[in-house]
Length: 253
Image 1 (cartoon, rainbow, N blue to C red):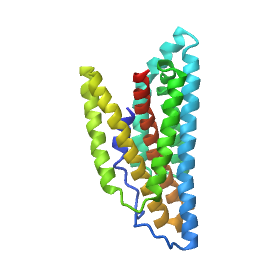
Image 2 (cartoon, rainbow, N blue to C red):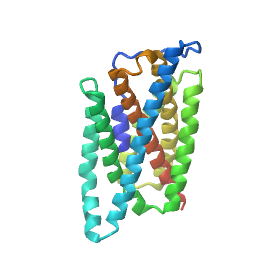
Image 3 (cartoon, helix red, strand yellow):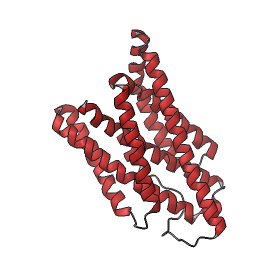
Image 4 (cartoon, rainbow, N blue to C red):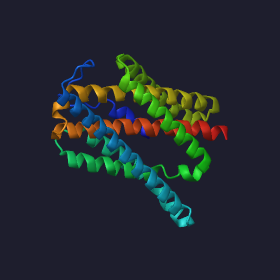
């Protein structure tokens, strides 16, 4: 489900905000504004991840309390996935027409719903496996995001290649749903990790470039909305990277 959401979201437009080559001699005010924008993106992303983690853990604890609770949680999974997809489409398509506050509420609502739909992870995997996957994901995400932010190399080609790969693994996942091939699942999992590592670097570079190009507008309503859009993009990168790593660690154990 998250693969499809990330796929549909990737084509989001960012209004009239420009992307430019990195300029190491930015005016002081523009550089400060760029830092404000980047910090806002990551603050929103971390907030979303925290909401998802807490809700996933809490719902899992509730699910194991009784058989009735377990059925309730499992019964909500598919409807909530549909709602999540609708929220992503609405947020990406109508962000220009809504206020930054509304966009923020929709992002947190999506994060909360995702926490509910991801709660079975705590039932299917041991805590050790989850912690290993999450820790590995956090380290990989931090390293890749740092590279994407610091590099002077344009990553557009890498991003385009990863986006095509994302479409490929979505199709492969659908096919494997019927084939149940362990070998194909193995390939999809490792390919998914590589693809979302590339997308993380690409998305981070776009955050930096837009922040630098529009630093003087960092406090504007429009840039606040753009920050939420990019926070959602990086949030989806992190979640999908974590899920693929979890499949790899879970299979090994």
